[in-house]
Length: 256
Image (cartoon, rainbow, N blue to C red; front, side):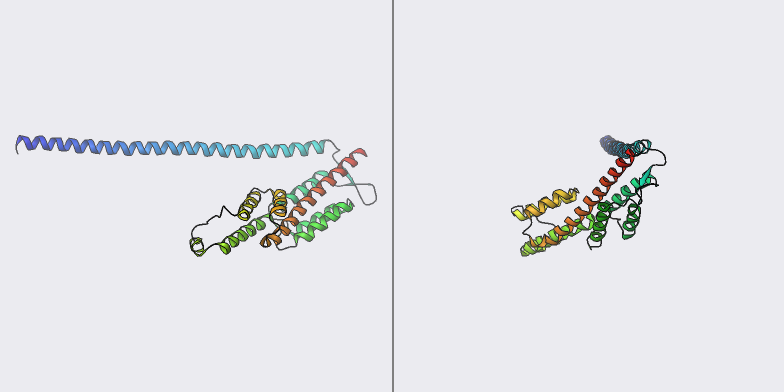
């Protein structure tokens, strides 16, 4: 082998070694960079979960603090007015927790006939007509087919999809199998999207007021508006029960 060929071979191996070293260094750098990003995302996720845990803990602490203040403001055997106008031995915290649980069941789509029956039995001993009437309204409205906010959200999306498909041209109908095309120039479409925004963010009173004002002439939405009005009525009656219960607490405290 000539000297020239040997020099070329040496240079070739040097170049190959440099390329290999550069490639290995690049891989290592990328892996380290990815690891760094993963660590950063992991820290961010940990911080986020810690914040969520802190919020839950704080919320729980606030609720327990309020419950403690209420129970400490009265005697251990706090009494309520019974049917005879006297007081009965029923734990105040149990009554408060029952209405809180009732409200949570409603918002978590778990308000069953059995729970309504139980709450009616608990509040029946107070002998308050406004509470009994509110519970009767809740029981009646809860028997309807669409009796949860979750179902109402799903129903609205179906209405919007049907409206979009019905008013789309052939090309848009073909594309709708894969993509959802918005008609931003339509006032009705804009109103539907604004209504959907209220619903997605659980702004039910705003959604009801907006639907009645801006979409009252949209026939496809009439039954939906009625169902929304019923659910808002249930929510208001639950608040009425809570307010009436507060009045009984204040009244019974004054009789101690």
